[in-house]
Image (cartoon, rainbow, N blue to C red; front, side, top):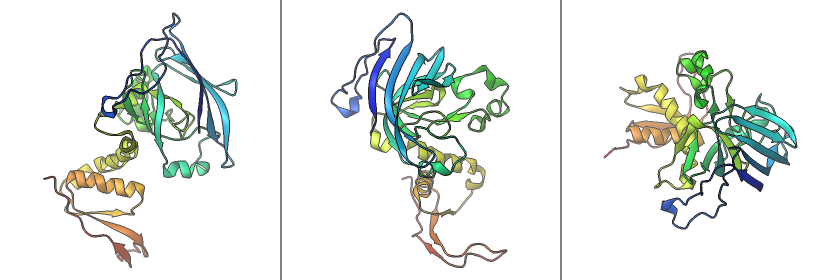
Length: 273
């Protein structure tokens, strides 16, 4: 559970309803102020290094153009440059990365959660790509960053990762997301379904990386039917690629030997028609 305590924003924009969902959402208005600054404070459960959760006080102060201060328990925690937008978290999925967060190299404590569907100040429902690179905030540093300049912004060595590395995640009521990573969700996709956009994008990216090999592929094997495996299968179905899935590996490749034993799902031949 999270608790929003106060909201003072220096622009005027009512949060409008999403037409496909009927009744108007009940939200406060953002108030116009001369300074152009915004401040939002809240309490949220923060994941600790011992695997427990602790309710922690946070505040964000700043704006999209000049940057933000993230304040934790009354002390400045993180300074962000311009290019980040304030969003209200609506839904956040639970990823295997969240379940294994205590074992990752990134510092704790942190508000975790990165499979996020959120709402912007105009009431638009959006999904968020999680890598905060130079390119994602339109920083001039993207021109000299070897990864951003090469079109590999998700490998930017100076990036932060929403809900994983430093940036507070979607299990809090408010997030600061890179403006270049925000994608509006179509009205005919519900929030409950849209929360799968981020993990589905990971599956689609895996197939995109193999696009040259998949172009003439007759069959594709999917090893494992976990959450990501099922999303890979969904992406293959969209492409119309024949696939089969291995649900349980008993033996593995040894030299030139094939799999010793496995359980195989029914071979599926999806049709785009």
